[in-house]
Structure formats: C-alpha cells, structure tokens
Image (cartoon, rainbow over all chains, first blue to last red; front, side, top):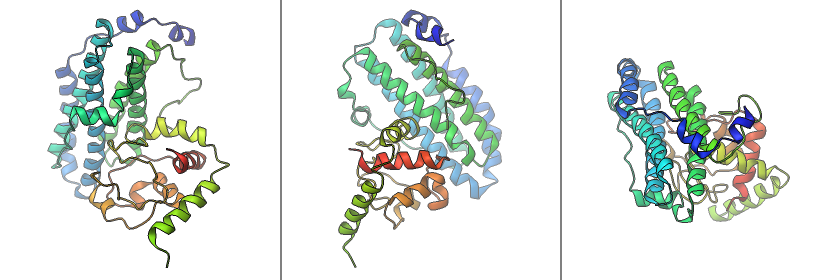
Length: 196
Length: 119
C-alpha cells in the first residue's frame, strides 16, 4: 500500500478521480438534512450551539472554495490537475450548499463568504510559486478540515449532524489522499491517523 | 494593582519560560494539523489569528467577528486558560462557536508551548 501510494504518478492521481456532479452531492446531503433540521428546531437550547458549529464548518468550506479558485487562476496548474482542482472545488461547493440549507432550516444565519482578495491575504497566496505549492496548500487545508470535522463530532447535539460531519470528513480524506499521492507523500505510518 | 499590559507581559514571559522544555516542534506539527483548518498565526481566518495569544485578552482581536459569548469574555489567555479551552471551549465560554477539542493533555501542552513562542 505504502509503495503504491509513494510511486503514484500525477497521471494516476488524475486517472483515479471520477466525475461527481455537484447537484447529486448536494441533494443527497440535503435530503438527510430536511428531517434533521426539523428535529433540531424542537431543541432550542442545542440548536444555537449546533448552528454555531455548522457556521464554523461553512467558513472552512468558503475558504476551501476560494483556495481552489486561487489555484485555478494562478496559471500554474496544467489542464489535468486543473480539472481535478475544479472537481474538488465542486465537492466543497456541495458541502457549502448543504450547510447553508441546513443552517437556514434550523433558523440560523449562514456566515458570509469573504472576498477572494481577503482569502488570498489570509492564505498567503503571494508566496505560491509553483503547482507543487498549490497542491501543498490544498493538502494542508484538506488535512485541517478532516481533523476539524472529526474533532467537532463529539460536541454536536444531534447524531444525524454527527453523521453529516463524518461524511464531510470522508470527502476531505479522499481529497487529502489523492493530493498526498500526487505530491509523493507517504501513507500515514499508523492507524487512526486522523482526528486525534 | 498592575496595569493590564504589564500583567500580560509577566504572563507571557513566565509562560514562555515554563514551556521552554516543552516540545515546541511537536506543538507546531499538532497546531498545523489540528488547529490549522481554522487558525493561523498571522491571519484571521475562520478563527482569529494566534500571534501573541498567550497573555492577550480573550475576544480582543480588532476586526475579527467573535461570537457574542466570546466578545463578553473578561479573562486573559494564560496557558492554564488555554488548556481549559482546548479541553472544552463550550465549558469555558458557553455559547462559543468553537467546538474542537484536544483530548490528550500532552498534545494540549505541546500546542500551548508552540503558541507561546510562535511568530
């Protein structure tokens, strides 16, 4: 397994990605969130807490979407890598849409997206000089998102929301794995390597 | 009573000294993988920037949109407060948006050691 990942070429990285439509992803999540949101409205004390947590998650998704935009607009990515970046970005847009819908249905106010220029400053995009720099930034952000989603599960008051957080973490883990492979990174040495 | 800035400086100096033996390098790795989704040292992101957090008043970064609960907080971020925070942010500040926890004491200590010296 380790050797397979370490020797994976960028072509393999691109070849393993299959097309997923944004609408299918978003709708699948939202279908589950309808019932969840209605149930959460009956628990006023816990709803505000969960809305706050979901808004933090939404902030991560806004940032990820803009990070991929910065990468795409850099002119540093070849077409194959660019296609994958756009695909990953579409996943994050699906996450964003699902989170906004859930927050709204729970009676909360979704946190607003910042400007692309602000994200560029926040992420120190000026230091990016190569495609590798972009992939490393994406890998770092995906790892952070994995750990963030896994880390908040115990704090969520509703198990269904916990399941959504786990599904989001699974998507981010898929992104991290492919990015790590493309960068020639080794597989994690031990088990339970995320979220603790 | 000492002026707040003087008191904060004492906290910062004492905490830096106290954590000198801590594993700052491991703390940086943990910080980047655990906290890095929302935070960075130099920039406000989903969470506020952490430059100089040890010794700083809670909820005091200008321009960052804190939760109402954290805006009302009165305490200084000492290593002890940060340790409590990382065990359960909602227990320390009820109503905060941060829900992420660091369960292991040695991991929290390493992250706080890094925060005390990060630039």
